[in-house]
Length: 428
Image (cartoon, rainbow, N blue to C red; front, side, top):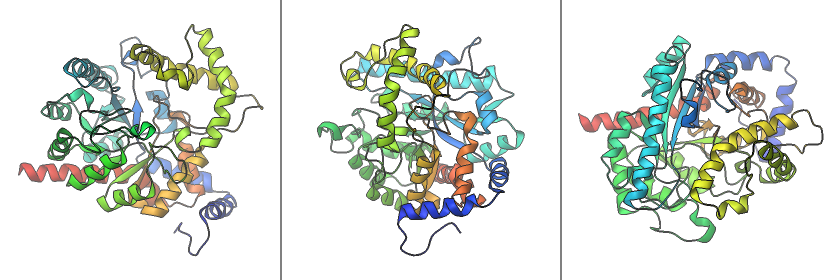
């Protein structure tokens, strides 16, 4: 058992695990064996529809953090591709534009699985399908919806999304939606509903009825509490970490984590540097600022500093977000061999959050996500090709194969089973 008995503090516990395991020369071989045995599931990978065409697609090694060659190289079995839509005005015009964007992303994912690479990747809708496809050696796609804003006020569209493959949905993103308040309300203490709107409460019941997991990663704390009070099944945080270790509104504090444990849900620890170690992140970003600008200038693209993002138009922001992954990719390559770069947030920082949450709420309620191509990526797990390094660090910390299997997707699939079983019971 990896658990430490007694009154050692959290940091001492980590050091003890690392020093003990580093004396074992076989830990890498053990990690390789475990990594081959377990189903590795990453619950948050953003996509750009431009990468799902006949000429440019995921069968090629692209300047993206996820594509099929990288998934195979790192032995990442399952990628949850994200139907993401940014927040806009709460009116019919905004909803219609958002729906067009969402349907384009659904179509792109289906195109990859059905037309572009059916022999390499298959779309799964249940845990049984995940396990069946895993045995064939093919990669597996699943679909999550980040922000229910495109639904508008027509809850019947949730069923459309379910039929298109959506297996989790978040009710908000960075901005208050028609369904609930977002975590971003903490910045100015301005809220629309103090939790869920009337429509949001109805959405909880509808998502339960359809067997779609509810994702609470971007909603406000009060929204999360109200969702848990209404939901008849466990929920997930598809990409969040521990607020006790990194004070960001997108992370979950101890009270939220314990509520999630009581609910039976799971928090998918996210490999996004500013959500893991803010001090290291800021030092690295200060150094990288000129590098990003250099790359952006070479591409003829304007690089925006964080304060500037608050004053640009939504169109400019969308253009920026499309260019962002390529700029970051090229910048990382430029500094890879330099010795003067401040240490970046790394896999050890990431697993610190896993350790903390496992010790607080138990091994059955913690999982793994990257947020690749949406801002995620850390030293050692900068893209899907480096997925093994997470397993290696878990082995170094003393986690067993059974525990690693739960972290890498077993817990997530258990929640999916419970949510779908409840929906099936309602039908019957």
